[in-house]
Image: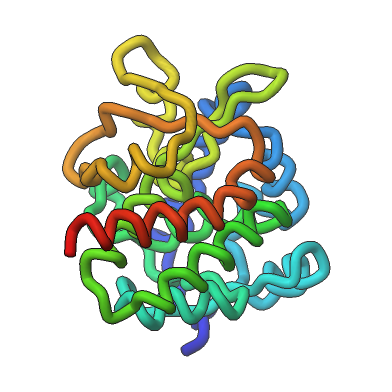
Length: 241
């Protein structure tokens, strides 16, 4: 599949620009520095829907990763095979202008604006590849994939990072949501240090903001936790047998 760039409509351009502007208003001082630097490195801007061919050239030179066009949600095996091959699945369609605030299935704004800037960070990319290797080992075990999906959910989609400048967002599910970008750093939700076992024992929430966020110290910590993820998974599989 390829991105049919000529097919984008005025509505699509409106949605990209509107959501880009809205997020760039709230993310400085809230999003992780690596993410904000990533936006510059891959040259995202309000006036142009990202062209995958151009983005891929830039990404390839930085971390060797690429975007792979998919229609929408894909099965677990295809998803993790792409990640293991350093290709990030991304849809090319946009939500409608009346769906700006919420969309159940991830569209291009979520996939590309939310995820791609951080694909310029090598430790983060190595974490994705490491996690996918584990997933492919256990791809026929539904329970194992559920536990790995929770790790992905609470890191890649809804993770926070604490660095010298304070608490910041790196999860794409938050970065592409103006409401959750503000909520996750406020007083209401619980925030705890990154803990693989706790995450694996916590089902994810899809229909509202998260009630709990796990906080990493840096992306290297995330990558270095891959062996712990596999060990904890094995342990929980034995307990659940």
